[in-house]
Image (cartoon, rainbow, N blue to C red):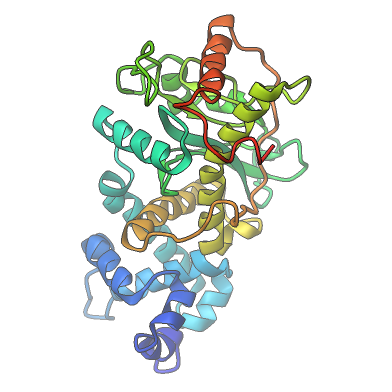
Amino acid sequence: MTHRVHSTLYVELWQHSDKFASHVRMSVSTFHDLLAHINEGIRRQDTHLRRSISPEERLIVTLKFLASGESFSSLHFQFCQGISTISGIVRTTCDALWDCLLEEFLPQPSPELWLQIAEKFHEVTQFPNCVGAIDGKYIRIQKPAHPGSEYFNYKKFYSTILIAFADAQYRLIAVDIGSYGRNNDSRVFKNSVMGRRIYSGEMGLPEPRAFPGTDGPPMPFVFIGDEAFQMCGNLLKPYSSRGLDQRKRIFNYRLSHARCYVECAFGIFVGKWRIFTRPIQLHPDVVDQVVKAAVVLHNFILTKEPSPSDPEEVESALPGLQQTSRRATQAIMCLREDFSQYFLTEAGMVSWQDRML
């Protein structure tokens, strides 16, 4: 026991915060805050035969697994715990992270929270009435035993899907986890609970309001996405790349500039939790547990340690969804026209939009 990682290396790492952070992807103080949140959820009773593994060690084992992507066999040798014990620790701790952090760090947004997100988005990106940027990524997994074909995607590997909205601080504000990888475009999103709420206008968004700096008609609050998503009254995507005039190119650039925040969020997510850089050697149900834990940890750490990253400088290694060419209704296309026209007005233009085309 005296030679295992927890009783040697990590005891020394407490004294070196930079080295500790490189192992578990957070500072010592953030780690202790996290442990306080989930301590009771992962504590186990001692028995007359053996002492239980401490909550601290359970959390470190799980963070090491997420941060490195090492196998249970590798962690078994490092922590001197059986492979099945390591597996159980990771699963129960991931569940506890989700259960204990969900309400505070991935809450159901209220109209007031949507307004706060929109204000920050406009402050940082100058995109009006935007309540989040959406993107979908494949999470690579090993081939499941049954039914493997459901997880085999058009890029010829096995996967599940993570769809997320991000705010202008790189936090994930809503997620859909665990759809089959075979569903490779916006259909998987439209069929999800979150997608159905957006396309039916049931996301609880604030009442429409005029664009900043104008006294024009009220305009709806919107999410922004790429070509993989079908537009609706609360979701905008770029114009097709063919036959673009100056106005449409400016709109596409402004939308792309704002949408970088979800790409950056995924980049931070994967950069911190390296398990997602390779196929995860677990059953899909356990993969979902891992993804859930990583999502709430992402938000928890950003709350404690805001990221200084520039969205132009962080890229995600996760493959994106297939593009779709479904045509929107005339009313929705007119909505996009209203946004693009606003970017040409004195109130809506920015000094750099023409230089960047």
